[in-house]
Image (cartoon, rainbow, N blue to C red; front, side, top):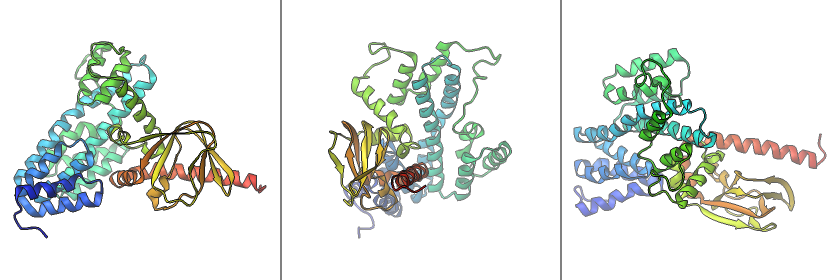
Amino acid sequence: MIERTPSAKRLEEIGRGLEARSISMRRATANLLARLGASAVPVAEVRLHSDRPEVVEAAIHALGGIGTRQTEQILRDHLRPLYLRVPLNLDALDALHRLVDAPVAPRQALETWLIDSNRRIMRRALVVKAALGNPRDVKLLDALSRAHEPRTRSDAVEALVNLPTRRFIQPLVPLLETRSDTSATLANIHPRGEAPAASTLIQILEAATTTDPWARLLVMRLTGEQTEGRHRGDVSAEHEAMLDLVLFLKTVPLFRVIPLEDIARVARIAECLTGEAGETIIEADHLIGHVYIIRSGSADVQLNGRTVETIGPGTSFGETAVFGEERHAATVRAASSLSLLRFPISIITDLAAENPEMLAPLALDLSHRLNHLRTRLAVVNGVS
């Protein structure tokens, strides 16, 4: 138990719980700070500037739980720069679609980044409204973000903008009307419909990506700027390598729905391992402590000494721990020279708790692999 009015030092010690790796610890800390009231506001407010989304969300819940006019204003101020990004992102998506001659890979990656950015803005608005105790708004927003039928979307937007809390919704209307994964138009820039110059489209993309180094680097790749170009600034070979790693992880089912910004944060703690042909990577029945992802090479999955499957780049193993498995079901051995990424299972399970939407593609991938394995086993055993 702590005193009713803790000292500033004690409050800061408590506030560090918002930065814990454990989601349960962050939630418990947010609830405790909410009970402490106005004295806890500075401790929670400073965490709104964290580069870890889960820390920011915990701070939002703490401030929402305090529930004063001051904390409501703080949360509104927190959303303001995100709201300003909505028209920038939508115009950038449209500009990107007009750059038909741009290189395909960076164009697709930048489109993914913009869509992820829109989804993050929507999620943050949902978190703030949930923290402020607006369950009806949250349900409408969530349903609208998933709806495809135009009439349904139109009715939901009209309902939202007529709620007492519409000041939180109004800035999102352009995003809601176009859906988070579609683009706006450039009619406000070119009202007569003439085709904008490529230089104008690039300027729009640069304006939308000024706050994110990975997105800026994607724009540079899109425009074909060389390493010594005038806009490259502090971009280094290390930045380039990290971006390649992030884009690779985005193709893995485990990370497919995770925003690029969050993948970049997780990628920084990945261990890079290598293995030679024949080397055992994991043993069957050993406790699952890590998730492995093959970046290059191939590995054999073995049951009772028999190879039942050969897996290659982009395949993960150990991720079944997310669904409660405690031990590896099979042995994995390198079939060739192997490059692996290894993540502590605690990081992955926490990521799943914060982003439950990642479970569906992961479960689908595991289901496909299981069906493929059953087919192979049936062939091996001579079952038609």
